[in-house]
Length: 200
Image 1 (cartoon, rainbow, N blue to C red):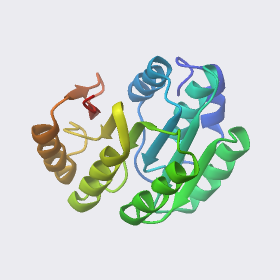
Image 2: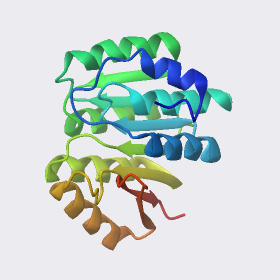
Image 3: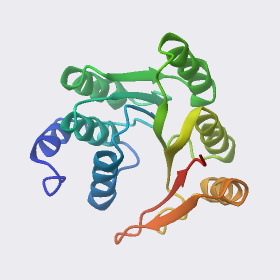
């Protein structure tokens, strides 16, 4: 599936359980992998681990430039999520999964990381958890509140031609109108996302 990006990444993803819902296309994976290589974040947070495709992409890219830490948040509705997390943890020691509603877990856990590691900064966030308006808005705003100036947020499924995520679209448009510094991407296979850079 991802052999065009990186052989080791492809072999790792092949070990993961089948996703019950949601997926990252090869075009999205290519974009994410090379964006991480380009920007070289040291600390990344994501909502919506699912079965770990994006986590493996991020961790493998970080491994290629010397490592970093990924903290993933997932509500944990599916057994496959826990199975996938164990596979990813065995491969990458700097991967962490926190289960629960992201509206509580993200604001509850990320500040603890910064308190324990005062030099740490949130360099990149991938928001791809709950697609209802409340969850999408909370995840996006909380990540932005902790994102370093110049850091990036990838807001997934924004104006996605294959999946009309009304809540995500409304939240994304409102956020872009207020914050600015947002670019909408549509891959050749019609998957949409918004990329935001926090103003310096």
